[in-house]
Amino acid sequence: MDIGKILDVTPEPILSTDAVINAASDNRSMDYCLPVQMAEFQRELTDQVVNLHYSDILRFYDTISPTQNQSCAPSDWADSLGAMYQDSLLVATHPYLLVDHYMPRSLLLKEIPDKLARTSAKFAVLGDIVSLLENKQYNVALIARSGKTLDLVEAFLHGKPVSFERHTGPYLREPSAKQRAHKTTIHVMSSSLLESSYNGDHRFDLVIAFDSTFNPAEVHVEALRMHKRNIPAPVLRLVSNLSAEHVAYSFGLTANPDRVFTEEVIAALVVLRDKSGTIPAEMKSLYLQQLQPLAYWFADLSLPWPLPDLAPISGYSKLDVETSMASSYHRRSAIPGTANDPTDNSSQPSKRYKLDPISADHFAPPHDYAHGRWTGLTQGLLEQYNSLVGRERQLVSEIESHRKLATTQQLKMESQQDEIARQVRQHASFEETIGKLERKIERGESDAVRKEEAVVRLQDEVASLKAILASGEDADIKTKQQEEIQALKTSLQKANATADARSNENDYMRSEYQKASESASEALAKVGLLTTELAEANQRADGEFSALRKLTFDEEREIRDSEIAELKVKVENLEEQLKRQSEAAPKTSRARYGVRSSSVPRRALSPADGPNTQSE
Image 1 (tube, rainbow, N blue to C red):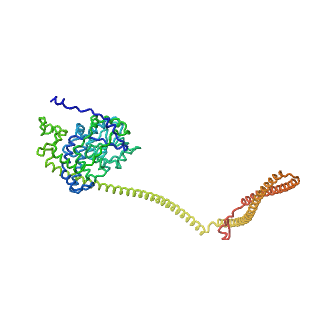
Image 2 (cartoon, rainbow, N blue to C red):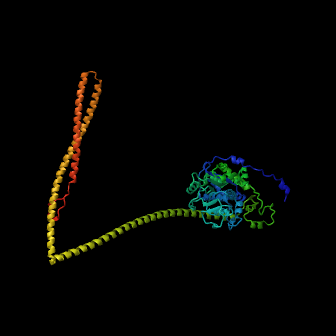
Image 3 (cartoon, one colour):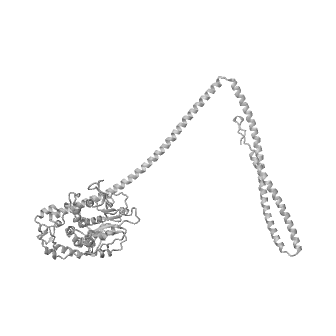
């Protein structure tokens, strides 16, 4: 070890986060971005992915016109550029998602969380966030791409002091009741509504968007953010700075995937590959301190986001793309720790690679002296990679067709379920109607049985009576019955005569009542008229009295006195007449009630008396 060489190195300056915190933007949308670094292998793999599509990139810029900046994607190279974009997104999340042969056979080993954090800076940042949320009573939703991404997230969370629930896909290891319960619970779910099976009722305090598949406009995402809340839950996006994720966020490619095939997007992917994962110098101390300056915000998520927004991506042209591709072709990358590196002092590099195959130092590709650059991909690997990419595209198209078919089948199944529910309701109503009709039929049958029994009983009685009459027996009884019938007829005639007399009396009293009513009405009218005249007389008398007081001569006063005396006499006469009329009215009413109370209804004649009898 060369101690002098180490001591001669300039020490790293102590950076402060005050400048970053003070530069916070006024973001009131509750949708925040945290720029994330990238590991060295992520950067190198991003560069290789772009270089792999070098010819298709040049064909793309040769196809579009200089002023064209819209979707223009012929089928021969559109798939290639689309694969470049998707592969860059996978690398920005974790290299294992693109390079399958580096994926560990088991994700449940104890050292897996540390290896995931070492090979992808995004997982390292997620670990820092989990540490800040350790003692908080939070429900956190972590939304990411389904499949391997969620498997890696679950494997990473197995080694962290949080509880988690997976709502998309099977668990790598089923949770046990013996596991320690933590205050913070992370709910891992897919960004796709079709693949997410979350149906809980939690109130989420924070939503972590782990990759670029997150779309805040999705219905289930909006429902998660607003459930049991007055304002939406804050969203924290983990975006690899200056990577394909940064480009997707800046140009809105998640909501508009067709914008990938535009000049500015392709140019940004190509030019920024050399700077992928690079963060501003003033933010390095934030990650060196494991996000501790943000601890106060994670303690109170209602506070404003303390960091500035992501830096906007400036527009790049075709010239910038050609310059970047040319400089990349002639650039030599000096990465120590490879098998061909002359500065590597390891005596057994192959053994070291076998013991630690996912170390960041060994992700670097071998050196190619023929072209003076680091390629890392042979012709065989390129052919294998292209075949795998083609197979992947085919599988993706099949998956999309299956998803569309599943959506159609789902809609058809829902319509069938609605039809079945309608049929069930209709069947239930039919059963209820049938039950009512059956009960009604039972009642009718019982009534019919009773009536039949009554008919039989009456027929028996008639038959017995006919038999008695035919035999001529009981002559005394017959004679006695005839006498009783004759007596009843006589009584009935007397009753009819009495009823006729009462009816005539009622008619007479009714006419008298009508006359009395008319007299009472006339008397009441006269009483009203007399009352009016009395009031007018009193009014005139009052006027005369007042006028009399104004007279000064005795003669006029005597005249007025005589007139007043006459008026008083008239008033007394009217009062006497009114009194007599008032006394006569109650007698008429009492006579009316007496007439009504004495009315007796006539009885109906027996059929034996003939049709000329009357009844009231």
